[in-house]
Length: 292
Image (cartoon, rainbow, N blue to C red; front, side, top):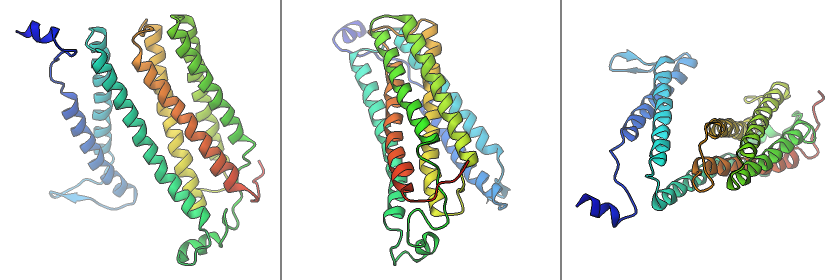
């Protein structure tokens, strides 16, 4: 009966996975610990059941559980693919899942851009008395020196655009079963991702404003920093694909793990272009540029 059921349907029932439950517990512990950690950093307390939870250790325990879930769950997914369980239907659903994940990330950036454009386009709005006091009725706010958009930001733009071409090269090499081209393209992409993060870290260290001294700094660092975090995650994603490619994983017919990483990286590229032209170029127009 089971054999007939398997032959008549394009799916295969596998053993129930413990990872959704385990990951949910880890996320709950990390969120609970995050509240305590923030209270700890602010010098406060977080009492519950007669215990002060305002300490870093609970957050790190939750983080360890989440990271272990990620490793175990993705390892099982790769194993299932090698065993032939990723049928056309399963592969389609994996793609749907990645598309919805990227769409949810887009919504995060919508929030940061909303905050930025609301503050910049309505800097002199009388009803926002506190904002008017901070900005002086102009954008960038009075007294703010900005980064030169044609210096480090432009350099990082070239780096990311180049990394988009190298990851596309790696993808086309895989489709043509060119293993060396796949490895070379992924290696260059990972190195360019590391270079981008290094340049951005240096840019932050020389920025003439900080997060807390103005609404300009707050919106700038939230938007660019959140993107920088995505670059870091994407670099790790591609580095794992590189290790798998060096081990002989991926075929021209089955390579969704790499394809998902490439989608994510192109998404990061597109967001950066919007960041560059809106926050670095448009928002700094006419403002004094800091000397380095």
